[in-house]
Each structure stands twice: as structure tokens, then as C-alpha cells.
Amino acid sequence: MTDPNDVSALLAGPTGLGTSAARLAQLLSRARAGDLDPPQPGLDPAYALRPWGDGSGTPLYCPVTERINEPLADEVDERLAAWAKECGFDDDEIVKIRKARFGRLVMLTHADCDDPDRLLIGAKMNAAWWAADDYYADDSALGAVPEQLPPRLVLAMAAMDPLPRMGEFSVPLEQAIDAERVLVALRSGLEHMGRYATHEQIQRTCYSTFAMFVSWSAYAAWRHTGEYPPAWKYLAARQHDSFYTSMTLCDVIGGYRLPAELFYDSRVRRAAFQAGTAVVLVNDLYSVAKDLEDAKPPCNMVLQVAADRGCSIDEAAEVTVQVHNDLVRDFEASHRSLLPVPSVELQRFLRALRAWMGGAFEWHDSNPRYKTGAKKT
Ligand SMILES: CC(C)=CCC/C(C)=C(/C)COP(=O)(O)OP(=O)(O)O
Image (cartoon, rainbow, N blue to C red; front, side, top):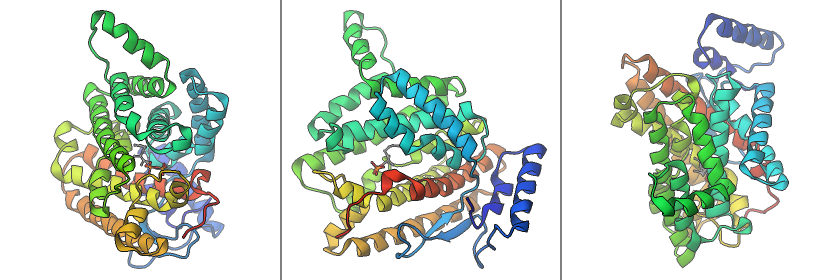
């Protein structure tokens, strides 16, 4: 598998002479085989204009995919499937989890980590978030019911952030969590993270998840009333329902700690939201057909724009691509403006955000989850 600008892996991959030398050797042998395309003129080689979907629309301006290592992805996916069984997912559900390739997602997005056990943190957490999203929030066929969502999310928060003991009232709560595979997955994924993360890193992830749950509750209200939001309001919800949540794992998986005063610095936070929202727009572009198949379609930027403007899906997709491309350019500018900050951790984190965007594009583009038979209207 080739990415035209994979040479940026040299800049952004794991540090260490052995790793860099191995990457260099790999790239040289691919260059000799004519396997690398030249960088696109005028672009930072870390970015490319990437055709998406059937290739007929305006390309996405997106970071390149920095690392593709299929055996590593397979290893993480194997471990993830074993864990999903322990959590209580049934055989059919495990087949779906395997197909979604969350192990491959983290191999692609966390290009600065070669350790399958650390990558497994991201695979477990993303699988658990997506399970909550599918089973509770989005997918009617899997039992998502808007009216039941907020109470279900309350238990999800309890699973992630255990309550103090409350005598007899703790017993039914613990039983309810133990009996529900999605809650077990959230709790267990976070426990795995706890083997590597500080308390502060864990709580960052918890609270960004809980903010995400507020957005899910807004969608549930909109779906329940049938009054879907205009695109601007949908984007306000997407700020916290985005891959920013997944990106809170970047330093933990990368094996370092971005100090809180930098993680929460408004400039860094803005860059992370730009990155997280950009990927979520990629997700919306790839999800249109899947979302339209639902009896009560979930909110989606393309669908909201089409409804607002009374335009076609293709036209609304173009608008979404422009918003995405502007966000990525804004991220690039944010990254550039933060380069003078003398923190190795911050510089690694910003590169990790960029790598996340590039890897997530590749994952969406190649994932069967986003290839459905539905026709565009
Ligand atoms: C953080 C995380 C992976 C949460 C899962 C839900 C989420 C924020 C997504 C980005 C997925 O959004 P959406 O529900 O639109 O995704 P699908 O189209 O169902 O894949």
C-alpha cells in the first residue's frame, strides 16, 4: 500500500536511530522501485490533496498517512477480538468489530507507537466509544432509541468514573454495569489505559467523553422531535462529539505526557479541535449512504447542509469538503504558530494530531463500514 508522501514518516515516526534507519531503508527501497510519487508542488510534504469516495468530488486537503504496517494492525485486531469476547460481545458482534478494524485504525493514526499493547488502548477505547454510539445513539437496527439514550449514558459515565460506595445502592449499579457489554468495554478499556496513563490523562479522556455524551443527547432530542438542526448548530454539537476524544489518547499511546498547562492551553486546544472536527467531517462524508439507510437518520453535516439549502447531496458534500479543507489549513497554521514553543511533548503532540488526521482518512477510505449499497439522491 502506498501513500504518495509517505516520506514524511521520517519526520514524524517514532524517534530512535534504529527506527529511523529502518524507515529510511524501507523508503529508499520503495523509491528505487518507483513506488513513491513526488510531493505535490506548493504543498508541505506532510499534506496532500487526497481524492475520496468515488473520486468525483473536490479532493480533501489532508495530512498524508505516515505509517502503514498491516502485521501490526492484525496483531492489535487479534488482541481486540479476544478482549471483546471477554467483555461479553457475542460472536456476530465480534465479527463486526473485526470488520471495523479498530486495530488498523490505531496502527494508522498513532504512527509514533510500535507497541501493540499501547496501541490496544486506542483500539479498545475507540471500539467501546463506537459501540456506545452504535448501540445507544445512532443505529436504530441495533437498538438505539433516542428516548433511552440519556439514561444509558448516565450508566456509561458511572462505568468510566466509578462512584464512591453507597451501601446497598452500589449493588444494583455494579450488577447493571457487569451485565452490559458496552459498559464493561468502556470500563475495561479505561482500566487498560490506566496501566500507562496518569490520573490526569485518564480524567481528560473521561471528561471529553462526557462532553461528547451531551452532544449525543442533543442529537437524540432532535431525532425524537424530528426537528433536525441547521448545519451551524450541528457543528456546535460536533465540537465535542468528534475525534478530539480519540486524540486525548495521543500522548498516552505515544509514551509521553503532555502537561495539563499545555494540553489545556487555548491555542493547543483549538488545534486539537480543528483536527478532531476535520476528521469528523471526513467521517460524515463517508457515512452519508449508511446514515440515509437508518429509519431515523443520524445527524450528518452533509445531510444538514442539503436540508438547509435544499440542494443535492453532491452539492452539500462539496460544501462539507470546503469546511474540512479550511479546518485543516487552519490546523496547519495553528501548528506552525506553536512551533516556537520549547516543549518536546507539545511538538510530538501536534505531530500526533496531524498523523491522526492522515491515518483516519486512510481508515475511512478503506473501511467496509462506509461502503454501503445505498444510492445518493
Ligand atoms: C470518539 C469516538 C470514536 C466516538 C464514536 C462516535 C464518534 C464521535 C464518531 C466520530 C463517529 O461519528 P458517527 O456516529 O457519525 O460515526 P459513524 O458514521 O457511525 O461511523
